[in-house]
Image (cartoon, rainbow, N blue to C red):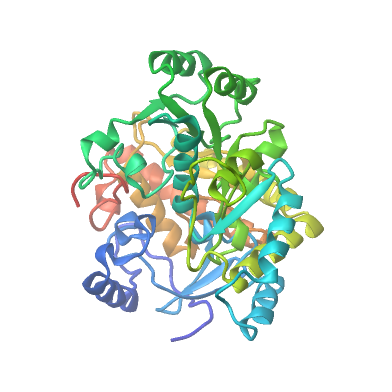
Amino acid sequence: MTTEHTERTEPTENSDEFRLPRSRLVNERLHALIPGGAHTYAKGDDQYPENLAPVISHGRGAHVWDVDGNRYVEYGSGLRSVSLGHAHPRVTEAVRRQLDRGSNFVRPSLLEVEAAERFLATVPTAEMVKFAKNGSDVTTAAVRLARAVTGRPRVAICADHPFYSVDDWFIGTTPMNAGVPAATTELTVAFPYGDLAATEELLTRYEDEVACLVLEPATLNEPPPGYLAGLRELADRHGCVLIFDEMITGFRWSEAGAQGLYGVVPDLSTFGKALGNGFAVSALAGRRDLMERGGLRHSHDRVFLLSTTHGAETHSLAAAMAVQTVYTEEGVTARLHALGERLAAGVREAAASMGVGDHVVVRGRASNLVFATLDEDLRPSQPYRTLFLRRLLAGGVLAPSFVVSSALTDADIEHTVDTVAQACAVYRKALDAGDPTPWLAGRPVKPVFRRLA
């Protein structure tokens, strides 16, 4: 297998010249041994055009290579977790320094307190922090803590946000709710983002029953003026805990997350993804009086907050500390925004020039861009997404989103925009034909949350 970019003739739009034979074989092996063929549903091959789901060999910076030897400019790296680019030297060096010193002990290591001090200096709106390995665990811990301190059973989630946890309190609300008791699902209620009146109506309807409000503090759009402050006031007035899920907004909005950018302090917040630049680390942070309920220095009933064998692995905490240093010293958040603005402008111009500016739509904050693919009637379309993804892959761009990493170069952006323009030319043909099927070469991509496989 080569480790350099494989030059190939651009396939014609009706051909199946672009093939990934080794990736296809490995995908079969993955499905034979791993349910779904991946360890995260969003990485499944059903999210990509049929037989065009590359299996990754390795990555460096903003590029990845598949097992067939093809190189891609990659976006949304590690589902938004690798914001500095793959194998970032300062992060990998910090990890290497720990590997020969042991990674897990029978008692806390010095690195744990140093990592906590570093995190709380970066996110000064929090007073205590506890580390874990994934976002689901810390968000569920926040929910459990809220229920314990309020004595209330219900959880109110923002219905406009796609994912909070693999645990029953959330998964029961999705189409993939098999195995979740109805009694559990009934304890989770929903409120719309940006609508304080609807949220207050919900809290009034379930007066003294709602333990917490859980939401991403920002979405594809900026929060309406006064919205987050209004939620803070509602939570205080109704006696519930305000929880910010900062898995995506953490670091990408500011080093201190959306709470640092917008100046609204939640009771609890959860971080992950960008925190470790691909290494497994997440964090639950918040008010001391709440967090201490999971500790040993209080007189209340004990809360089983978080207890993870691997939550304090030294190399992952070292990675997190290095990430925070790089962000603050190198102005990474500003660079992410600058790269995203350049990419968004280029994609919009390319789409408009091909006559599909109303159909290929870039949305979101510059540091967290996604794209929508719309059909002839401007409705979201999985077949058109399939067509678009297929053309991007053929052009060497792996982009389930347009979420940038700081490792991208101007040349990477230019190549991406050129590839988007070629994809949009095919998109225009499909729109003119009124049917994208001839350009799909297989089944369309599928949404993650669906009832049947």
